[in-house]
Amino acid sequence: MNLWDIKAKHYARYTPKLNHLQKKSFEVLSKLNIDLKNKHIIDVGCGTGVWSLHLANKAKHLDALDSSKNMLEILQCDALKLKFNNITYIHSSFKDFVPKQHYDLAFLSMSSALEDEALMQKFLKLAPKRVYLNFVGSRKSDFLTFVFKAFKHDNKKPRKKDLESFLKQCQIPFYKQIFSETRRVKRSLQEALENASWHLKMSGIGPVGLEKLISTQNINETIRSKFKLLIF
Image (tube, rainbow, N blue to C red; front, top):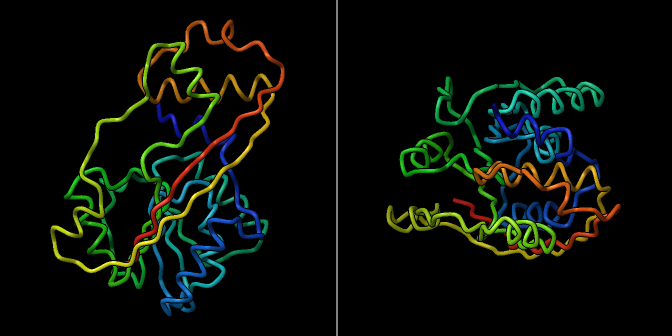
């Protein structure tokens, strides 16, 4: 079972208005004179298209790649409603993906697709310009911290070699910027249960007893995140 297919129905979707992180990121692209107009772009780990449709709005063509069929279906639904006709949808993991062409720009946001050096090298070869945006460490959620503590799990993932270290090792110059964000999210009991259950399963923990743990009808969650933007 692909857990991202389960996550899809509650995952953020495209909105025409740029959020804070998108606004800051596009400002950096503009500052570095990276023009998306008339470019052929690949969005690796595109999800529901939170970024994809903003890219497609400027690009000549966008290839949207994701391992979750449900995520891609949401992206395709939103794209059809907005009459986008310059997107190719590719249902595949990045590991299994076989590029059939060279792109002008490779884009990746909030995806764990680059899990080893071979995949980092593969991403490098996709295009002469690449944009990478991802979390710095783990997001800090007061609600999920409470849940994982109750299940006696610290939710710390094993440290892997990250893309920045790989670029330094290969002596590839890059531009870097860090962004911070604090969000407050109000969830119904059912939404909170589904969210906590999904995160537990992603950590290999069965959510037995979760309903007894969470009894408040509305959950107010504070999420603190840091993001790293790399352009190379």
